[in-house]
Image (cartoon, rainbow, N blue to C red; front, side, top):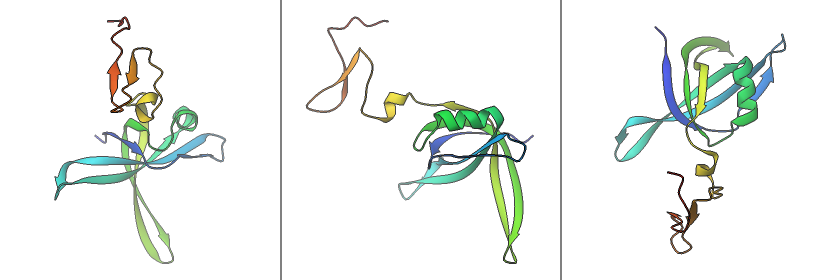
Length: 134
């Protein structure tokens, strides 16, 4: 069984191109933190992800640098030769990808009618005058 599932942040804006047969192909690098720390510092792996078809269209339309996403796919290894030196590759062939945070959680904007920022601290606080929906 070859299955990989992970959560990470997109390192840079994804690259999307079209294959010779006209199908979209998207590539991006995903920064995934390891479960352990070395000398108090987070360890991070940078994984190359490849997406085809409708998934690549999703990447093109909705994903950008810094977004936190969940990815499910399989690991594919390969190799190529350049200038007489053999190079090895490892890619995640993406089957599914989903958002892990709301658009507002990444920036300072907050569209919620129930949440505002305290002017002194900058922390989000619930507006006590609002009727909460729960």
